[in-house]
Every structure is written in structure tokens, then in C-alpha cells.
Length: 515
Image (tube, rainbow, N blue to C red; front, side, top):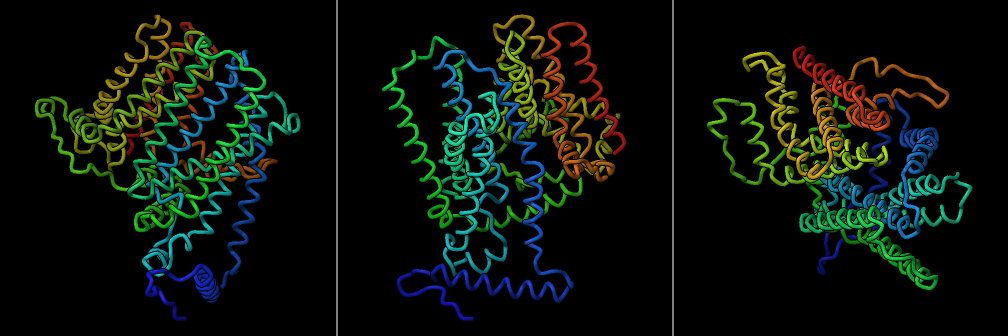
């Protein structure tokens, strides 16, 4: 089949010819695959069947869990405070989704490509928006479905009823979330374009800042205005509906029509290949494969040397400080996250709800990932500590100096002016977080027993158990923080939390010794 790539006016071949060319390639590929392996050429149908079956099995469970989590969130009693809290939660959720989209952009998504498409279709023969049109439409619909799913569950939980209690409110929340879900998708697609990544980062920071400002207003009732009149309330709702609709439609148009033509297809294809490799490693139980999904870490020519005086006394600490000096932006972001986490834990210890303490502990755990990069790099060695004098526990203690120091900096900034109870609670959570980081870094391969099928009335739960193993650090820190908050201040709770942190750190050190 002959295809003319360009004509005199510089335009490219139209969309229908691209679809015909792809259809012919797929037919030939299916026939060739069936002839070589003797398999069924309708594997994609079975894959779709499996995805639908998993959605039907785990979808209701996830919806109920989200509704129960939303029902546990305390809301202010006054109407302006409740509205501000809902708006703050929505904006912060959008900001968190945009942060995830920025990370996804480095992994080859959300507009993914394949090496074959990059070599034969996107290198000048067809317009990228024609090649990626169906993919972009599926992404838009998928983002809308995920947003509506989460929003309806949250709205049902906040209302304290089921899906049938407030059908109008749930429908409005679902439609609004389906439109707003296009914003993180657009941010991720824009981050794949070299000239628009800064704009994507700016939008993300704007959403996070705006959400924090509104949340502070909701926490401080005096900062909120009085309840407006009925006419002003209707005008505000109308303006909000128009704004959400405009933002959602504009974002969808950017994803489908504009951003694909500016996509860095080579970087997207490379990221897609890495993601496939990492996915196979995760299915095989290797959590260390996730460190490769973001690609090689580059420092953009930043020159930073080892502190020579410290190198003679504590070489491991000097090495970790060198890594932090090469990544100042990541360190600043981690410190900001740690300060926010310390503030939340302090608030929870001074009479706040348990969900605030859990959120603060998880924020501290997330921030500690950047601080403990030296420990994770130590764990990635073929035989950790084989070339170092002393035991593996001594090496782990050397790598724990930098995370402990940065944790104390975040604690000092977050508990300034707090009482003794708030300071003690934050320090205990920090000790637990550091112990969990050592424990998680000590094992990157899942135990073989996790792959044993676990048949339940809801289906096979082995993959759910494997996913829980990957999230074991988050689950342990969140669960321990919740139990500590529920138990209240007292010697037994403090002793149990310290014992748990020590046990986690000791287990991680033993795993390093066995490696």
C-alpha cells in the first residue's frame, strides 16, 4: 500500500487513511500471531472481559470504602464552613491528582505511544492527533468515569446515606467531577510537552496553594463571610456551574486536539517501554522495579562536591548529603511536605480528629522518601554493606543520620509554640516513620506465599494482598497513627509506638544482613 506522507502545502494524510492502514496492520498481525503460536486471535476480547469482571467485583467494594472514609471526615456546623470545607477538599484532591499526573508524564503517560508508532507513524507520516485520537478520547472518558465514581462515593458518605438517598445531588457531584477530572489529565499531557511542563507545574502549585488557603479559612470560622442571601447563592451556584463546564470542556479539547501535536513522542515511547518493564517486575513481586519507572536521574550539570572533612569521619553521611545537594528542589518540596505533616499531627494531638493525625503521618512518610534516598540506594546494591567495615546495622544507622536530621528540622518548624503533648506526638510519629522506611527498604522482593490464590466469595484476593504488600509502609504508618490517636496520650501508647518502630527498624537491619 502506498501512502503519501506530505503534499505541496505541507499538510499530512487525513485521518481515515490512518485508520485503514492501522486496521490492515492489525489484521496481518493477528493472523501471523495465530499461525505462529496457535493461539486465539481474539485475546483483546478476553482482556476486556477480565477488566470488566474485575471492575464489577472490586468496584462496589471500593465505592463503599470511599463513602465510609468520607463519612468519617468532620465538617463544620455552619453552612459557609461546610461549603468551604467541600471546596477545599475538592481543590486539594485536584492538586494531588495533578501531582500524580506529573509523575505519570515521566513514565510515558497519559498519552502513551509505542516504539513502532514512533518509528513509522509519528515521525512525519501522520499527524500525531490522528494517531492518538482514539486514545485521547478513551483517556477523557476514563478520567470522567474515575472522577464521577470517586465524587459520588464521597458525596454519599458526606450526606450519610446511600446512592439512592440524594439522586439529584449525587448526579450533580458526578457530572461536576467528570468535568473537573479533565484538569489532571490535561496537566499530565501538558507535562509531556517540553515547552508546557512549567505551565503544568504552575497549575499544580496554584491548585495546592488555593486549596490550602480555603482549608485554612474553613478551619478558622472567623475568616469566613456570613451566609449570603438566596439570590446571591443562586448566582454563585450558576457561576460555579458555568466555570466548571468551561474548564472541563476546554481541558478535553486540549487533550484531544492540541497537545498530541506537540507531544515529545520519543520520550513518551521510552517511558512506555520502561513502564511495561516495571509492570512485569511488579507482577513478579519485585518492588525495587518501581525505582526505574521515572528513568535515570539527571542533575542538569549541577556541580556539588563531597564535604571532605565529613568524608573522613562519616563517609555514608557525606554521600547522602551529596545526593541532597544535587536535588535541591526535591529537598525543599520534601521539607514543605514534612512541615505540613508535622502541623497536621500536632493538630490531631491537640484535640483534632483521628483522620488529621493519619493524614499528617502519611505526609511525613511521603516526605521521608526523599530524605532516605541514600538508604534505598544502599538497599539496591547487589550485596549491601559488603565493602564497608562493620555490620550492616552500622551502615543502616549511618544512612539514617540525614533522614533523622531533616525530620527534626521539619518537626521544629511544625511544632513551634506547641505544647508538650503536640511535640511528643510528632516526635513519636517521626520515629515510627523512620523505622518503617528502614523496614520497607530492607525487602524489595515479595514473599512467594503472597502469590497463593485466595478464593473468597468476592473472587481471588491474591492480587489485592500483593498490592497491600507494596503499600505495607503506608498501611502500617497510617494504622499505627490512627491507633495512637484513638488510644489517647499515655505511657502505654507511647511505649507500644516506640516498640513498633524499633521492631520495624530491627527487621529491616536483619534483612540487610541476610542480603
